[in-house]
Every structure is written in structure tokens, then in C-alpha cells.
Image (cartoon, rainbow, N blue to C red; front, side, top):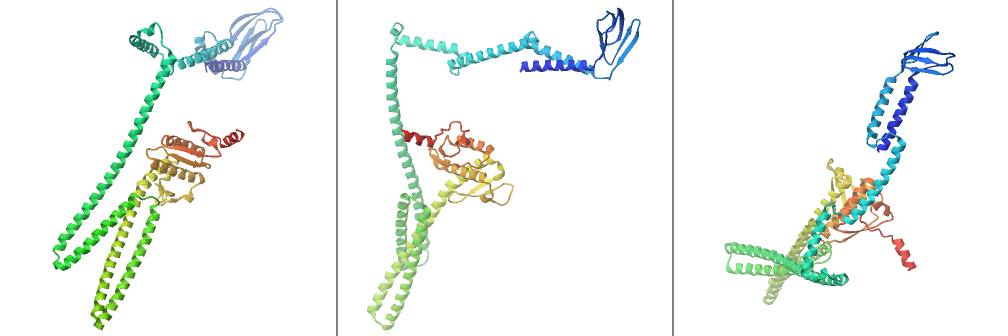
Length: 501
């Protein structure tokens, strides 16, 4: 850098000299005999002796005036130029050159270039020495070497106090190293066994805690139902009914209670063993509700039919037929009550499953949508606003802050669309993985994304790689060269090696 400044200063001085020479008036003559000349105006004034045949030159600006003995006065003029500006420029350049070259003791360009080469060689050697020193120091500051030496000396003295024979006969390093490795392996095995046992106990504790919470919720629900029944019982005791009527309602309530308890137990067992898609189960429950409704309707029709027959038998005055009809009516009423309880239980199960489904969806959908919106803002800025997801976690629309209406995904460019789907997949993976480092597979996800946003996406992928194991399948590995710790695997090369092997 300094050598470049020196060259620039010398170039400036040469340029000013050329400009000064171009601005001067030159008066040249060759006298035929001895004479004297008086310079009145010029660069150098005063009296000069002229010799025969010897050229003489006088310079000046803006004019040169000389008196020649025996000849007369000669005045030479030229255009008025800015020679003083050129002289000041030359003076400034010379001062600048002097300041720059003062530490080197010379202004000779060749000497300075040689000094620069010597400096470059010295800097290179210094860099090599520093690199070797840094490698020897292993990143520690030089000042810490003395402290490290004192610390190691103290450790050595403590060791020699414990093993004084080692001062005369040092121990076998290989033997001690093997013994240390064996002790280390045994310790690691013990630690791994303890960690495995801890994980087992932790899993059992988590399961027990979950079961306790579930039982507590069920207990609270049962307590609420018992309280409601007690309240209902107190209200029924004040209704002014006869004992027979109250007994009948009591039997009906008891049947409803037992049926509800049975259905609740069945529901809890079903929920405990629940696997699969809740939506499929809800659809099946809806079909069962329809079937139960049809069965109840059919039972009501049967009841009406039997009531008609009962009226016919009553009109005929046959006691036996009347008794049979009453028995049949009672049986049908019982069946109707059972079917009604069954329909109510199915409705309860359906509503319970729908609530569980909605709670499960809200517990996952909201965090995924929020994280997707934040990541999209980091990639594309704030103009997209909030991202809305459907029940199957597919992106549906964008709600910019500056608009009152949504933007369908069809209005986005190809690059923006693939960015929306990428942030949604990453957010869903991080939400579902929680504290476990799960694998996420992405297939050629960024074929239309511009370079600026691709760089920001690389940052997101690096951050997500701390919590997820990300596998990207792509035909354009060069686009992911910005991932610092990525492991690139050429599948074609692996296949070729497998064939040749």
C-alpha cells in the first residue's frame, strides 16, 4: 500500500514537471562571439557571460526579458498559464513523498521496491512462524505458556510425591495408557448402563404421571356427574310425585346412569387403545349414529303397530291378548329406552372424539402456523404477513398486514410457492419432533428460488439442523454449497463404486 502511494507521488511529481516545462517560455540563442547578457525577467535573473558557439537558454513565465550587450533588449511572451498551480502541486507531491519515504531513509523507487520485496519475504516468514507458534500453542495466548509450565511443574511434583520412584525410573507410557483406556471404557460402560437405567425409570415415571393425570381427570368428571345426580335427586324429591312414579323415574335414571358408566368405560378403553386417523373414526361413529337413529325410528314404528294391535285386542275384550300386548309394549318400551341410551352414548362418544380431535389439531396446527409465518418473514420479509394452514397442514393462503383480504397461493411465483411449502414442512417437523432429533427428507425443494433468499434459507436449514436430521435429495448440489457442515453424498458415484466393487 505504501509502495503504491510512493509510485503515485513520483508520478505526480513527473506530471507537474512536464506541466511546468510546458508552461515556461524558452529563449535559446547561440552567440557568434564573446558577450554578456543581463536577464531581467525569468526563472534565473542576473548577468551571464556568453561564449562563442555555446548555446544559451533562458526560461520564465509569463515572459522572458534579456539585455544583450551590443545588441539590445529581447522580450519573449507566451500565453498566461497556471504555472504556480503546477509548482504548488509539485511541492505538495514532494512533501507527500518526503513524508511517506521518511521512515525508509530514501526516496529512490528501486531501493524502495527492493525494501518492499524484503518486507514481503519477512512478512511471509513471520506469518509462517506465527502459524507454527499458534499450532504449538493450540489456540492459547503466548503469555499463558509460563503459567502452563508452572502448572505442569506443580502437577509433576505432586505425581513424584505419590510415586517417588518415577523420578529415577519413569513409568511405561504404553502400559499406563492401556490401563487408562481400560479404566475409561469400564467407566463409560457403567455410565451408559446408568443412563439406560435412568431412561427406563424416566419413561416409567412419565407413563405413571400421565396415567395419574388421566385418572385425576376421570375422577373429577365422575365427581361432577355424581354431584349433578345428587342435585337431580334433590330436585326430584321436591317434584310432588308419588312413590311409585318416583321409583319408576329412579329406575330409569339408574338404567341411564349404568348405561352411561358402561359407555364411559368403553369410551375410555377405546381412547386408551386409540390408534389411527380420528377423522375415519368420526365418520364411522356418524354411520353408527345414523344406524341407531334408524333403529330407534323402526322401534317407534313397531310400538305404534303394537299399540294398534293392543287397541284391537282391547276392543275384542280378550284378557289374555291384552296381557300379552301389555307385556309386549313393556318390552318395546324397554328396547326403546335401551336404543335411546345407545344413541345418547354414541352422540357422547362422537362429541368427545370431536373435541379430542379439535384439541389435538389446535395443539399442533397453531404452533406450526406461527413458526411457518416467522420463518417465511425471515426469508421474504414482512410483506407476506401471516400464513394460514388447513386441517391437513397444507398451506391455504397468506394474509398480508397491509391488506384486508387474503392472497391465494396460486398468485405467488414459483419460488415463493416453494418457500411457503418449505417453511411449513420445517415448522411441522420441529413441532412434532419436540426434543427428539428426527429425520426430515426434502426432495429438490429450491429449484426456482433466487440467490438472496436462498442464502437466508441456508441459514434456516443450518439452525434447523441443530434440532433435526435433514436429508435433501437434489440434482443441483451446487445450490447448497453455502451449508458449512453439510455432508454431500454423490449417489451416482456410490452406485458406480458398488458396481465396480
